[in-house]
Image (cartoon, rainbow, N blue to C red):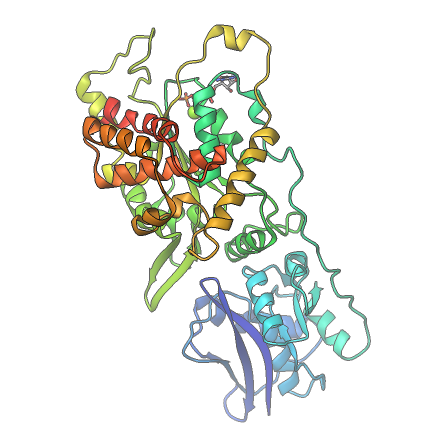
Length: 508
Ligand SMILES: Nc1ncnc2c1ncn2[C@@H]1O[C@H](COP(=O)(O)OP(=O)(O)OP(=O)(O)O)[C@@H](O)[C@H]1O
Ligand SMILES: [Mg+2]
């Protein structure tokens, strides 16, 4: 006796259909799961057997073989409980229901109730693309899956609900389709709260407009963390496609809840500096996306940058450049996207006051250098804007005024992004931070005066080729904010300012 029920599997972000086949034969009673299952899948046997009994059926006293096909792809997690349960009931003739044309996923508790799973969104997208008409999944995952069009999503609380539905003794209603709406204004705190710090705010506007990685450096209490937390409020609105991409990662990581089934604002991830390399970049025994991927289409904020584990930061370098992270596994590799803006903040020395205009620094020069050296040159090279955040003057704090609102800044950012998306429509990049040297020759025309200034800066600052490229990229964004197609001397000179910290602190 044989039955087949369709389920799904995940390889990184990509889902694929899995056929759960059950065969009952005579012989010593047993329960075998084959087809590259991991430990959690193997444990399905005990959960399914208990669930069958506790939902009022009888587990067949036969030799049970469950095969998960295709057999060459690894199956992970407990999501096959529900399809195994259903195919077992079908193979034993307990139900005559026809489960074809639908996809089933869900972990079972011993009493047959269905528990939430990870990766429901990418699996539902795959099911709809492959033409399946229905998907049955845990009720807690129904909301996230219901953004997918062209497939009926049924959230179930118990395995028995599915059997009863198919046998016509109970009804189940499909989840109403969820429409995407960007998060309302005010989801993040407003830039207007930050007084003074004109230069730092300008830098963040440029960073938002061109997608540039940025480092804020300054003494304690100057407002670095405060500025950083307000950065997402000046980023362009999240588009539907971006929201789905980001939600897929959060789905795979199990970071969604029934209350927040879909990511509606650009993520702002601020991992603590004690985060492990795997926590930051992704990986682990059961591979999961890391903070860098959870921040996809948003911001990864590294506060107190020198405190982070050196290894963890080094591993970030390549993903930051590529916009995707590759994770090695026993049997091959996985990739997760991570198109992010890295925002980092730090004090210039352990006591925090090195270079402060009034407060003396208590660190020895060696101590300062050791502290700064924890941030490696290659990582610094990937940060386009270096910004000094000086202590705020008392007059600014006591004036009772307010700064410019995030909405006003974001309007300028959106305009500059619009110019970029038109310019790069065929180039395969989204914004200026993605410009390669060859693209720069095409997209970054500079006036003669601008060229002279750039050459002067190059000679005076002893810039590397990388430093030169970065000044040009940032100048491109500054020109875009001004609505100018050709880069001029004013744009270059502003861009050069955001390189001076290298020399002040790192003597590079
Ligand atoms: N520019 C500012 N405008 C208004 N309030 C400010 C400003 N700068 C600092 N503050 C006040 O000081 C507090 C501390 O600022 P914040 O935590 O951002 O400092 P920080 O630069 O991150 O310091 P640390 O280096 O110690 O982490 C803020 O919560 C805020 O109340
Ligand atoms: Mg801080």
